[in-house]
Image (tube, rainbow, N blue to C red; front, side, top):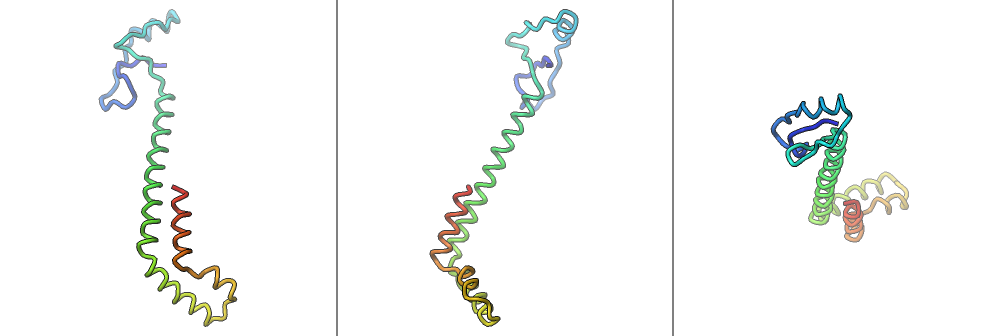
Length: 122
């Protein structure tokens, strides 16, 4: 535990250590010196809060990206279906089994289902 003048780990200015109470604790083992101008500061707590905040921010960015993916899928479904038809025709020409071609074939419903599945991850 350190005794800092700053109220939180998020302040942009460097924290100043109040050495007098630290020396008092070191010699007398007393920690009842907290008041409105001094705050006990635990670096582990600050780091834990920073980790949690980064997860929330990362999750928000991830969710935003997933929503955008679903939006782009739906907005471009006509082009996707056209490109898929070319791929399906090429696979049929190669003699690919019908069951595999069916699984790879896209239509409006399948693209809608894919977009919904992406949104479920957000």
